[in-house]
Length: 259
Image (cartoon, rainbow, N blue to C red; front, side, top):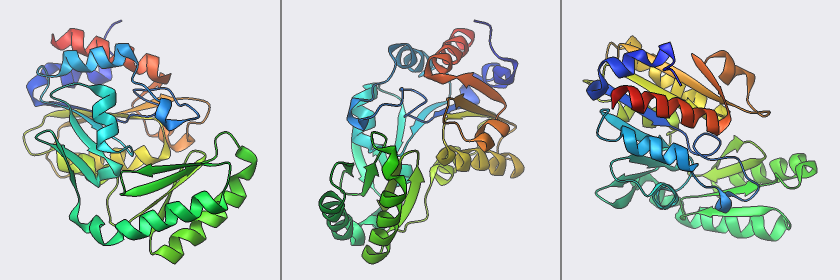
């Protein structure tokens, strides 16, 4: 597969290039049970080939860092989890210290969600957040969303809307955008970010900010398209690929070019 022209700036100066990626729906297929998500083997191989050849390879996800580390099992990939509330540092998970006052509230909210929303999947995310999923029961969207908004308010948490789910988490001002911006230290020439959902738009915004600040010359926004893709993500992308398999092929082409 030839390299997409939009990625050429990353290949021109690979040592000053950053490859930043979402996990669910990008490196892995969307599945009903989050625990069943797995990195596509070809995507994992491409990431492994890029490590050491480009300046930075990072995964920025809403998943806990431990989940990402187990799923990828790759050395040299920077991991940012829980939308920036967790990072992998020297083989251990470091949690934003601003989370600590809300740990009990997250646990209590998770308990209540399990009691009051039977039949829905309650995903406890390393004590930092809790996500309630209704992908297998889409008819309960309005019921679940209303209950969870009230639940978050009562426990002093905030909600984050994802596809067929709501996450309740501490009111700490982080997102994929702040995570991406923190990863792009001065010295990078080009960076690309790939994602598939509305939560990836802040990462696109971060690329704009870094370019406008003069800290980056080229930015590439990659949308991983599906039937559920938000139109604004597609509209703002420089490259649109058809699902995780096509993203893996794009990464393979980049790895071959810089290899």
